[in-house]
Length: 160
Length: 160
DNA sequence: CAAATTCCTGTTATAAGATAACATTGCACC
DNA sequence: GGTGCAATGTTATCTTATAACAGGAATTTG
Ligand SMILES: [Zn+2]
Ligand SMILES: [Zn+2]
Ligand SMILES: [Zn+2]
Ligand SMILES: [Zn+2]
Image 1 (cartoon, rainbow over the protein chains, first blue to last red):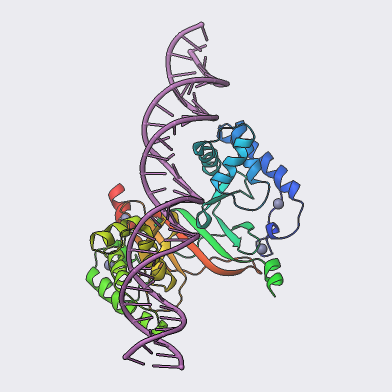
Image 2 (cartoon, protein in one colour):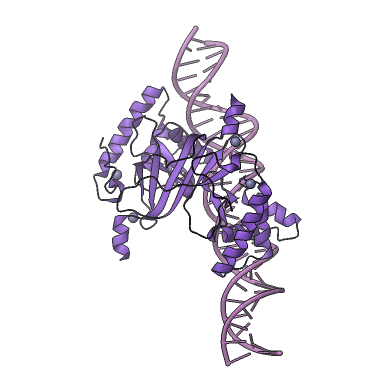
């Protein structure tokens, strides 16, 4: 369970031991579901595994296609429900700009206020812990979406 | 052209002289288009006026319906193109969480990094000037989405 | 001014994303 | 082992968005 360095390049954009991302995330997911008293059923688990294959957002229909091929239901609600479950329980996030989903990179069951860095070069998405920017008094924030699109370090290099 | 107080409640959430919002915005739009050398054609102008009727986001199809009723084209590309023009030129913004559009509240032609406060009570949206939260070095941000959903002051009062 | 060019508006058709409503199955608990 | 709820699956439909092409208006150019 590595704690990402908030000031360095997120590991999602660099070569890293991704098998650890996967095993950490799956282990966290099991624990979190147990703590919350919710069930990480086969479709749900498999959906998370599919998202975890890369730090790349997947559309609901991409996920659905995979699920269908693997013998799960093949109609949209199957994917939307599994994804909805994961998002509700903090195991995955929806990227609004992309209408897509990524596995959470730091699922510890804590409610966290994630921000996302979306590289338009390689398509990777990094999740970082960023608070909200300063907001006016008085408005009570319940949920926030913070998404930045641009170029990761590698892709800046490639462009030059 | 009022400069919103960054620390107080945004005027969008309070009773205010909305006719000024409209006339300011339309005047700014004319000027900005002139400066940029782009054309604020009738459909585009009307689309902006429709968005300006309230500080409430409208879906592309809502706008389209209005345009159609008023003798403009009634097929989706008509609305999407007008909205696209307004967004490109900073006269309107897309609210990703809602798949909807609002007129810009501070169009001065400056590129600005807006954040949005979305009240789930009354459906109003306020645009505020908020920088990005602190992001890791190295990632080059080109566009950012910052949207907070919650309750405005009035709706907090109403809920209590 | 007329031709050439570009931009704008409009259409048809289709793609992509998402949900409502209902039937069926599996599990949990008594 | 029956009752109740959660989860899965289906059909059907809805909403959001874009591709591709045709005609028209404005602008540029010779
Ligand atoms: Zn990884
Ligand atoms: Zn990249
Ligand atoms: Zn107003
Ligand atoms: Zn409100």
